Image (cartoon, rainbow, N blue to C red; front, top):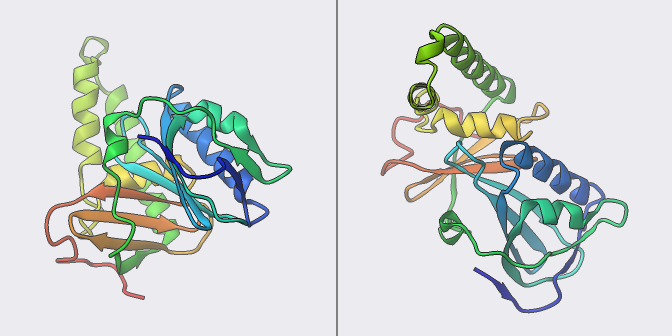
Length: 223
């Protein structure tokens, strides 16, 4: 999906905007070297959306722009990384590519309600423990049992578990940790709208579809 209404050059308003986007793309490409991302810019805000391989979540990195831009395009993550100029704080969107199916179904832009917050250190601890469990249980398998199907089933068992009573699956926490969104000590906000849940920090967001009435039974601390 591609729609460009003006120049495709984006100038970041914040000094660290370009560097932050580059760091996000670098982490994404570690998981999927041929990843595609969708860029949406409207006015003075731009968002980069990605679906990291094997996580089954949407990762979002947003940034403020110095000048208004209208842009909606899907591009190669690798080419976008090369187009980021950290010194000048700019990027020029590369040529569009055929978007993957997920790029056509993004979370809503508005209508989100903050339903709680999660301590950053606690979320990091949960993510680290889940990764350690996966590695330990993988190592306990006999070599002949360490098949892709068996590993996929084990991953699904672990990453489908909810984070406490929030309704947020651990795969969202894993993705946030792997992409560097859980850096720092500021609590992560939990937001909901319709059948979507979103874990948000100053470094990025992870959105997943949830069961209906996602706010029911939440055990997080409201702000």
